[in-house]
Length: 163
Length: 163
DNA sequence: GGAGTGATACTCGGATATCTGGTGTCCGAGTTTTCGCGG
DNA sequence: CCGCGAAAACTCGGACACCAGATATCCGAGTATCACTCC
Image 1 (tube, helix red, strand yellow):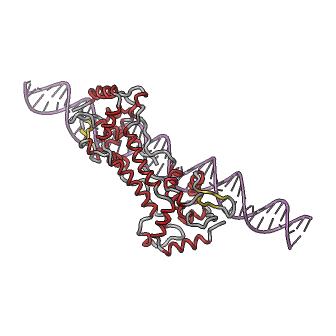
Image 2 (cartoon, rainbow over the protein chains, first blue to last red):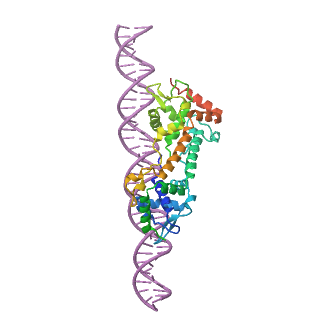
Image 3 (spheres, helix red, strand yellow):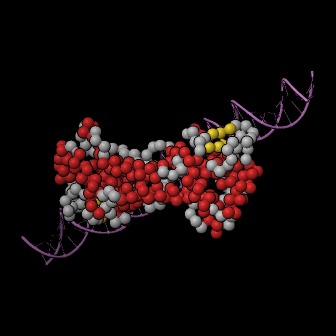
């Protein structure tokens, strides 16, 4: 079980887009450069975030990405769902209905306790991620980050911002 | 993000092994046949469970598998860990340390808030799985299962039990 | 008849192929801005 | 100076290789059983 790298990329990009001034955008190329990752592949994930209504993309020169709504209204879960898909990690194959001791399918209307257990755990995971917003992350970063790093980032942003 | 099918197989097998009389064993072939799955591949997962100290394997004719300790002392989490590995699903690549705005590594001693958030969610997931034991699952199955299915299983077990 | 010994059958265990899905890249289509030209 | 048109830059979307890990299989190692032989 492994989470896609795109999740980490998407959350970091959302956090960076949360600190740019309202009305400005940042191109995918800049986002990739800032994080030192592949531009083409990052754009693939940004597309998913755009399709999910988390980001808004502006075409043309001076175009780029920005958050579709305030950072406080974007949960980490929303980003994970957009990139990983909403399918649950555990998919019950109903092997209890197979093999020599199986009966007719009607007997198995009640969900398998094993499936229920796994789904309950996944609910706890999702609940935890839903409790955290991008604004929370930015707050944590601002509090912990080295002041020089913040200034360096702002200076770098100055040359890349559009809009 | 997807959990291996082996997790489902492993938990089902543990539940079945929990209901056989003490001192008896069940061969991997029988476990695979009962669930209608590939024997060779199932054995691979049973090996992992054996290596993790959850199952005990007996070689030779009249050999097979049995639980290494009471079902009430085997958590679902232990089975998942044994089959999926203990690596966390989210692996922080520390992309904050890359790119043009990065500083020297010493600045990043404090963990990334994004990583912390993902790990916290995973803790909730693990906690939920740790709260459930194989004995709990068997109890749930016994309460819900059709009586005919139980009898059919017991009759089938009668011919496969060893020891 | 009983005990010892070798062959046998059955099991687990690890090494080896295959295949799906994530990873990464590239190119064309569409759109908006920008620049240049002419009136 | 203003309006029009062409070029450029950027994003979007899909199509195409590549690679890791999961999936699936086979063959070898070990052990208890069984049969046969010898005492």
